Image (cartoon, rainbow, N blue to C red; front, side):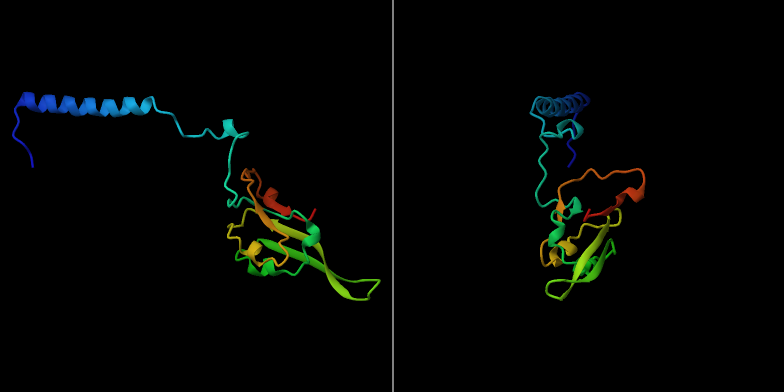
Length: 144
């Protein structure tokens, strides 16, 4: 509802609202800042442990080359190449991992591959600086 004010009443009302805005701005100007400047704070940067940055294979010996991660990946970013060898002592055949190829550029970080791995051979790290000029550098071999 608009009040009937004189010219001077409207002028004083405008000045008072302007000063209220300046008061809020001045108060915020002197409060402690919470914004972190990324390149300057690399040493003290805290990243959540739940962050999914890059797929890694900490211990390649854990991988049994079952291919469940490759099957569960919706974008086909994982390619597991395995080889069947015969153990000389027992004579049993088993799969051995030859290469574990991962395309970081096509990954959507859904974590279905990590959840499907029966031996926890793969996990996501908190590494997030993945910018490259050539997409071919985003194709990684994890078991090397």
